[in-house]
Image (tube, rainbow, N blue to C red; front, side, top):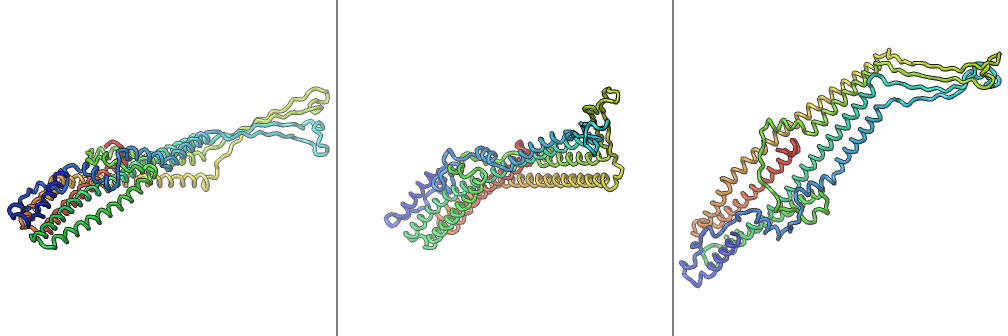
Length: 461
């Protein structure tokens, strides 16, 4: 269609330029059909693949969305940090659920200080002892479970970060696609404006139109060039943003614009979306924080339990010290003791610690409620935005785009008949260009919002 359009416009120019050698009835541009000039090809992706090659080459080996996601996830260091912290808490949980190290006693007992002779007194002994303190209540179990809950919190944070990375890289990739396709559409329309300039020059040379039409056409081309430059500038920004996630080395081939799927994906019912929101990693992390803090409260309660310990000591009497006056061997000594600390003065220690942990637990629960409300509000906002964008897309597809195309065609026929000014024709062309760009932005905005929805509820939608 584009080739036919350019060929027909070229024929129109040649016919107009020969007006001085032929009769008006034979050379009048009004005789041409409006359908022979089209401001936009039927297939936007075909436009992109043709016009984009003259602006920013996008080979078939360009970066696809799936490749961008893989590179971004592989390069992200914050997710790796969360996973390392997860393993650290697991190791700490195992270490916490272990008794205190025992104590060994070695020494001499009842040694006379006048001679320090170990055989002088009958009660002098060489002693070796073993001491072991037992944990209070279920303090070790509670401490270990608290650490495991924190490890699951870090795991949820890693999943949340992965979702966030996917959302950001998808939106960045779509921004690049938007600017690439924007340039393609503008470039396509620029060629048509150039043809309109040639027509106005031919009409001016034949005396049928004024010089203002030529100046107006040149101005419109300059404005289109300005829009192209802005699109190129925004493309550089979008590519830099995408390179932040995938790496500069992976942006050398550009992005695979021809693989971009900008179709509007369907939505589930809001009730189903809310149900799936409960599995959001951010909420999971908050639930695990509540569990961890509850275990810490239990640990504070364990401080009311007495701490038991035991001590076993063996006393050895050596040499002549081991014999009685009759020369008989004396017995060595074995001492066994149990220790017990009693939490008696609890008002300024245990009571205060329990109160503090209760306050912290309530604080975490408030944070959980706040996160839940924020995510629910965000979900409702995204769903509302998607619905409005879908309505706008349908409006553009069913009314705005056909009306803009019809307006341009009617203006062209009116200009050919001399009843419509060139300014009106150019405004119609600009309006059609703007509607195509607006429709593209709506599709991209929908897919970017859908990426945010996937962050909230997961990949299935």
